[in-house]
Image (cartoon, rainbow, N blue to C red; front, top):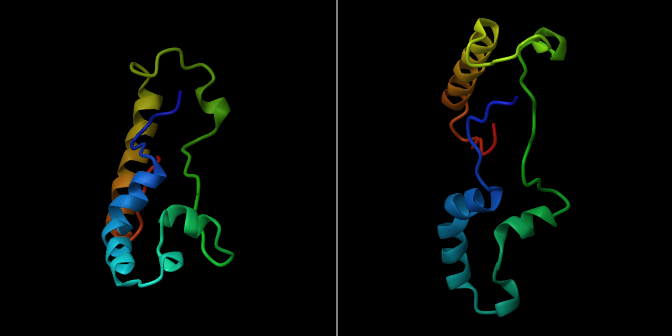
Length: 103
């Protein structure tokens, strides 16, 4: 019963955000072994970088929704959904340099 607010492939995000910088970097390299083929893989295999940071935000718990049979007509479900959507929008405003790709 999860609600999906955004769902993008992390590799697509990396390409969109870093693709031009990687291209410019690669153009300056004279040695082929210094060129970056896949920036996501480079970060993933790095010992001091992370590809992503994950955290969870939840309204209520499983027991709060065990009797919900139709999330579209449940006032509790719709209120909780609105709380999460508002949180997500405010999170993006407060953290413009962080890119949510799955929520």
